[in-house]
Length: 271
Image (tube, rainbow, N blue to C red; front, side, top):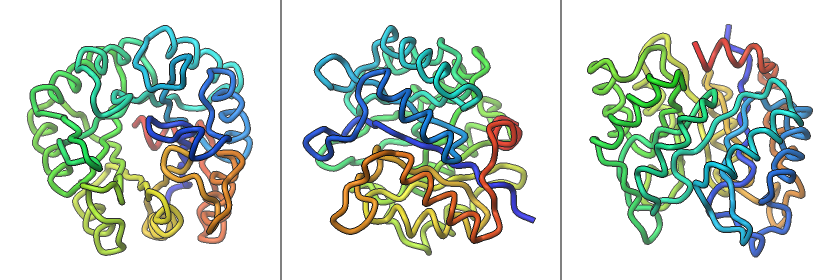
């Protein structure tokens, strides 16, 4: 019997702009409102990026504190997952600092890759320091894997004692420069997850629905939201992140996997 379906919502991201969609939330209260609606729709985890007053990605701790407080008030119980990569060009010290806020989870981008026309640097020494910071502060790393080698790296770091089992993997599929969003690739990635650990999948852009549908059928979990996709159907902008959550929850229901409550998600994700 498969686990209940853990749905993560990623409402903002670093690259989704108001030029692409007027509905992406920037301000703490806007993100909190999306959190409330997404939790009501069945999300159990929220992955948070924040923006400065001009809408630019930032790792400012004050902005994170304000946003986390607003989300916790709006959607009590929702698991908080903070990014350690407000954009692919930020300084390592700023990326590490958010771990001190002790969210439930933080992103652990498990390898360097071409990212569009840039390079997203995640060198092993930085990742080992990040893993140590997570252990120190009691934060669960979300192992964001953009390619097969990233899964292998996580397994090596676990052997070193810096990542504890069971682990929580997040497969990011469809980024230009990362692994392509295909059924074969998703099942190959999932096949590398050690027994007892869990995984979730992201499909970027038009790959969101196919990859989340396959992940649900294969016993994984899913992340949806405007960080990854702004279209709810061909040519139609989503007006809220809750629309993506509702679709994922309904897909899970049809597959016999009801949406996990935050309490159930804690048992699965934070084990």
